Image (cartoon, rainbow over the protein chains, first blue to last red):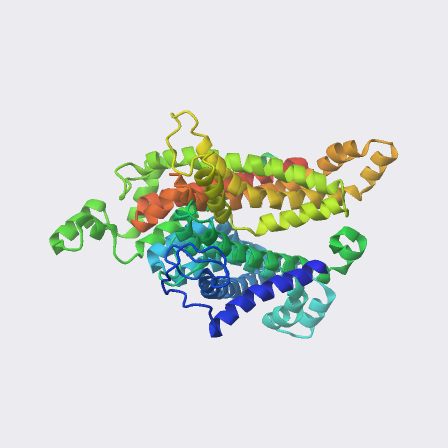
Length: 272
Length: 312
C-alpha cells in the first residue's frame, strides 16, 4: 500500500509541476539571463544553464512534451495492442498465432533504432518519436491481452454469452476485457514509465521537439558539454525524470498488490 | 530438443529476414534520396538521374531488395553512402565496440543483480531487504544516459580517473578503460531489474517443500539459499536475463552516443542523419539478429533447465 501512495504522490507532484507551468512559470524558459551556471538559489531554485536560462522553468515546460508523448504513445500503442491481442486470442488457431508474430517482430527491434528509422522517413519531429514509442509499447499489451483472452475464452460466462447469441465483438468488449482491467492498468503504468525514459533518450539523440524549446533529454545533452564546469544543469532534468518514472513504477507495483490481495496476505513482505 | 532448437533457428531467420524487408520498405519511401545527397541541391536533372542510376535507385524496389539479399547471403552488404567503406567492414568494426561493451555491462549487471538479490532474499521482510529493494526501484527508474553523464562529470572531468569518451582502438594499451563508465551506466538499471527478479524467484522457492526439507535436515541458511533456493530460482532468472539483454542492447545504442564510442548506436545515428540506406539496413539486421540470438539462447537455457517446456 505504501508503494501505491508514494507512487501517487511522486506522479502527482511531477504532473502538478508541469500543469502549474501551463499557467505560471518562474521565468520565461527561453529568455537568456545574466547569471550563467547559477547553483540552486532563491531566484533560480534549480539553478541556470550555460545561457543563464532558468532550469526550473525549462524543466516545467519540457515536461509538457514528455507527458504528452508518453500519454499519447501508451494510449495508441496500448489500444492497438489490446485490440490485436483480443482479436488474435478470440480468433485463435493459425490466424491468431500468425497475428501474434507481429508483436514478436516489434520486440526484436530496439525502440531507439525504430525511432531513428522513422526519423529518416518522417523527419526528426514528435510524430516519429511518438510512433516509435507506441510501436514499442504495443507488444506488451498485445501479449498480456492475448494470453488472458485465451485463458478466459472457455470460461463458463463466456460460453454462456456465446450461447445467448452475443457477437464476437460484444463478447470481447463487454465480457472479457472488463476482467482484464486491473492487469492492463498495471501495464499502462509501467509502460508510461518506459515511455518517459524512451522519450528522454530520443530527445537526447536530437529527435523530437527542436530547439530552442526545451525537452528533458535535450537539456541533458546541452548540459553534458559543460558538466565539468557545472553539474547543476545536468542533475535536475534527470532527477525530475527519474522521480516521475519511479512514481509510475511504484504506482504499477501498488496497483498490482491492490489487484491481487492474496499475494499481499500470504507474503507479508510484499506489503512494503 | 533438436526440434526445439530447429524451430527457434527458423523463427530467428524469419525475424531477421522480415526485419530487413521492413526496413528496406520503410527507407524506400523516403522523400529525398541518397542521389540528391550525392550530387547536391544545385545539380542538373541529368546529373541527378545519372547518380540515381549509378546507385541503382531507378529500379523497382523488389528487384533492389532481391539484389541486396542475394549479395548479403554471400557476405556483401553493400557500400555505405556516408562513409567510404563497405557496410560489412563498418559493422564488424562497430560490433568490436558494441559487443564488448554489452558483455561488460551484462557481466556487471549479473554480479550486481545476483548479489543484491540473494542478499535481499536472505533477509526477506527485514530492513536490509526493504532498503535494497528500495535502491533497486530507484536504479530501475533512472535513465542510463543521465547516469552516464553524471559518471562522466565525476570520474572523467572532475577527478580525471577514467577517460570521458571516444575510443582509441583495441591496439592501444588501456583501451578497455574507455568502456568502464558506459558499462557501469548501462549495468545499473539492468542490475536493479535482475536483483528484483532474483529476489522474487528465490522468495518463491523459499516457501516450497524442498526448502522446508533442506532446512529440516539442518543445513545452514547460507547453503539453503546459495545451493537449493538459487537452483530452483535459475529458471525465471534465465528468462529475465534474455529480456534484460534486449533492453541492454537498446541502452547501448544510446550510451555509445553519450561517450562517443563508434559502435552500432553511434553509426545508427549518423546513418539516419545521412539517410545511408545500406548502413541502416545492416545495423537493423545486426541488431535484430543479436536480440533474436540472445532471446533464443535464453529460451534454450530455459528449456534445458525446465524439461516441461520442451515437450509442449
